Length: 386
Ligand SMILES: Cc1ncc(COP(=O)(O)O)c(C=O)c1O
Image (cartoon, rainbow, N blue to C red):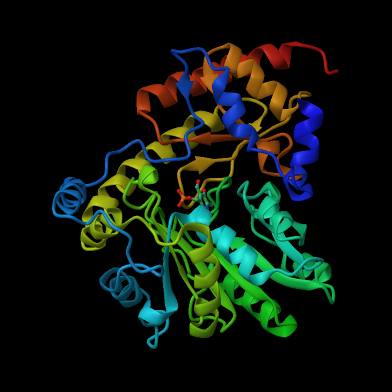
């Protein structure tokens, strides 16, 4: 059967794997503490849930326009006018999640052989999407010692005549870093100098603790923003996101989006439209995440052999360990002790010697999970280096 499958499958499929993160969870003991979650541990706001039910009960169960409901596109555009006053409905495509938006952007922007600069460590879809479009992902470094910020000099040194785009993600998964405005300015300057498209994944923009995230929208006329309601409204299962792009490019993005999914889910669009006018729901969630962020950083800083960069956004922390073990081995050891974490290497080679811990879980579980990491640290410190 394997041989038959091998001949049936297109070559591009060999370019990609399902993210290692999911595999890890499947082997977890049933009562494990889960520090691996990539989604808020909250329910969507009640009014948003009610609107979803109302929409379904009142007949919004049919196909809608491929680029999304006009009222939702208008409302999204309104939220971007402080960044670029001319933003209108024509700039917005509602997608079936941020993930679909990323895929549509890759297929609409990259030609075979193009090079695309992607963060290392970075979200697990950027490099595979580039490969599926026939392009070559070229990693740029995010290092703990630089606060996980990109080095503009390195970025520019990676640009060749084939470079087509740069993918940026602030606040970041997995590091939680929020780019200061000066970094955004320098990336925009590089993109302008080399005529690169900026694909800016801003799905965590609302989840920030000290300063607001600086959007790339309105900073360069070659920006495509990828956004999502998944994290902002805790609706990861509803699969609703959007793209914001220059009008002529939005027309092209919409072609790919149409061929992927015809149109985004209609009732979920009605519901998130209500959610856009409930910023307090997101703020309450962020207040709780901030407390947990402080707790997690405090607990990790006490562990010998671990160093931590305080995340400014998202709900992840990306501690570095100096024990002589690999991140998959450490994550496997923790799993055997009942704590799910994500090995840093799942996000790229520079994730080696890091773990991603999500604080989208209760404070009690955070204490328990990090307590287990501290125990593990004592064992590792006592064992001779390999
Ligand atoms: C950085 C980043 N971008 C995009 C996504 C995709 O989100 P969704 O497909 O749920 O909209 C995620 C989800 O974890 C993410 O972490």
